[in-house]
Length: 171
Image 1: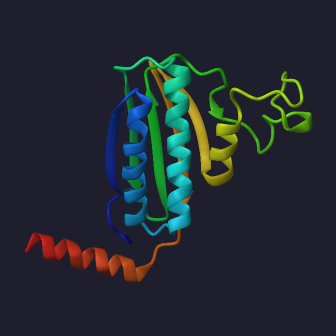
Image 2: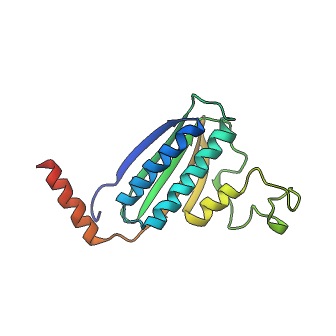
Image 3: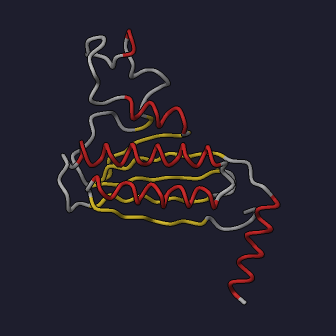
């Protein structure tokens, strides 16, 4: 992808848990098109699926007929993923979500939660932060926007194959 323009795709699903599996397959396919390894593609898929599930459960309160938008952009050295919804505003501050481990209290429980109590929230963000970089949230107008990135090392052999395939399709 050296010197090439970013490649982007936007996927939109209804705010229904039944739609999330298909989105996960599409996300993994985009990741496998990139220089990410199969394990990294799985990690991105896991993070997107976990986040979309949380959007549907918490921002939309399991109410269908709302949009959840996922934009994936392949850049020179990383994959950028942006998730958007118009649901209820989330309850953490704008900017970086938290420092590593900061949402976990003593005994592995989120702050304010008794040790051993089953958490309703908190671990999805830990999953995202453990696999993704530059994770941050902002509220813009009526939109919740979560941005995350997954870095990779470009592979010149893959670039040549991509360019060859593009030339073959155009011919």
